[in-house]
Length: 139
Image (cartoon, rainbow, N blue to C red; front, side):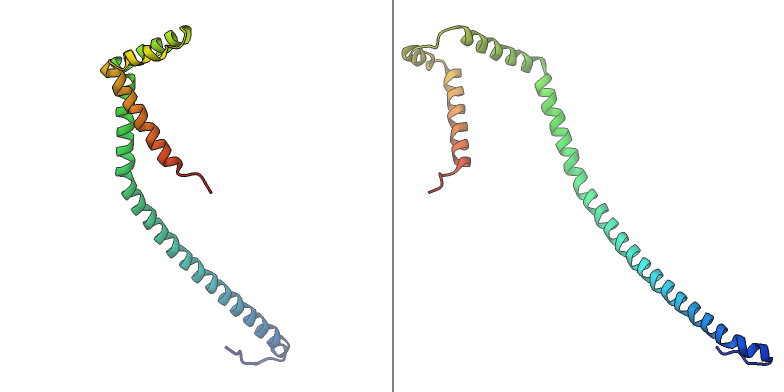
């Protein structure tokens, strides 16, 4: 937009006015570009927020189930019968700490007890799992 010159003083101001208008147009263009970039960033943030909401919606049932399982296990560990079993195990461990280790025939006699055989089978199974997890040695 060019202004018309009507007065001689306007002739001197004309270049200044045009330069100022050019600067204002450049500033406006830069601000529009910044505004467009901000709109793009807002759209990206909205998309990320929606993805996060979906992830939360997907994960909440899993987290709730894990909390429920942990609570049940904690209840089992703190139940009086569980505490009694742990106490019995501790007493046996204390007894074995203060006695000499049993001989081979004494161990063989203990294998007659079904609970001992059950515990031994469980231990052997756990060792097998640990061995498989360890894998074969490197060549």
